[in-house]
Length: 182
Length: 291
Image 1 (cartoon, one colour):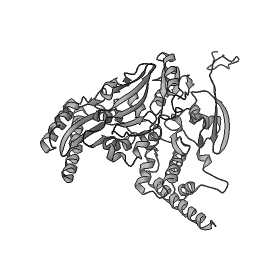
Image 2: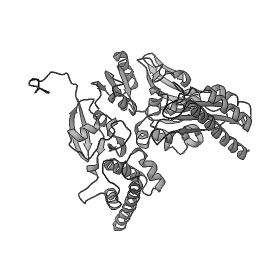
Image 3: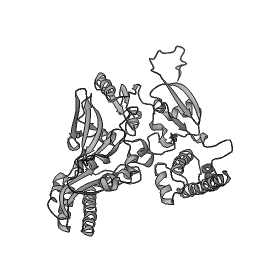
């Protein structure tokens, strides 16, 4: 009987070039050997097992795989892992701190900013980059900033609301911290 | 999707990048923003043997005007750098109108202007903007630098005239001969889509008279169309309803659209004429208000 698959018993020697890179992922500095063609999204999901980053379209359209590189949103399916050498990567796992959910995550929870949740990590990281730069955005500015992230469930209404609520939460938090400062 | 195997180089000088390009004998691709190249590699439309990442070369991320008015954009200037530049609207109104319409906000974070020109996508926005502005691309090879006018830079869909051992390091627009005005309009089915039709118009006014003008058309031909003849009809005149309609009609005639899922040929021609009219009419109103 012909088998549909074979167990490979001998490794075929392949001359795979590997490069050593140092990346800081969610605050943790790591040195890794990667094949140049490895996409950043695959390094994050399979190499580092941070499966919060989702791969949606795989063609630079949907933004589900968005991560932050040095604070700027990047579609991680459209960047090679070697390009992250020497840079800081933040994934959705990096949003949550020891003190609990990030205000952006709270905003999405409170305003029902997700249904299936597939686009959510990308949405939240793009929102984080927006709020880091502009703590008090208008609804238009939020819609504009999120226009590279596609959602098939919500019709965007609650996502936009979530980001606006997150912005208010962040501003309130900053005010409290300022008041508490000596 | 996984690209084919390649070896990766990240040179730190322009000279080292040019040397690597020379050694690769046409089997290398240059990686700047990668927002078109990486998807093409994943789809295996492009399978370079060597990928030369120029992001580690310092001093290429600039954009701005020289004292003489020449406007220069370095090879690592991202779309977002132009989009967020508050002065661009005064210095380069056509570029300022186009910058927020390139792809989507996340792609604009990484994608570069010069990379987009080199990619030579018939639906790329920058080629028509730079064509309308009379811009050029500066390239460096083993024997030094040369500049190539944008109208000659592209010789077909996804094809530019760079030699295999040349690296595009800058795009520039010559100093205006008068007051620079202009605009860019793009019809797209949704945010981030390629243009169904894009129209770039640049006009330099001497008083209320047109001293120099250019029109570039995106997505309505096998490559970007520089409708110079349509724009030149305006030179020496004050903008009025008649000459605007003539220029718009001529630009529509010069376009070579094809019917596809984005619209019929007649529809696209109509959009070209409409956009040229809209931009020129708004410039006409502005010059009248100033005068």
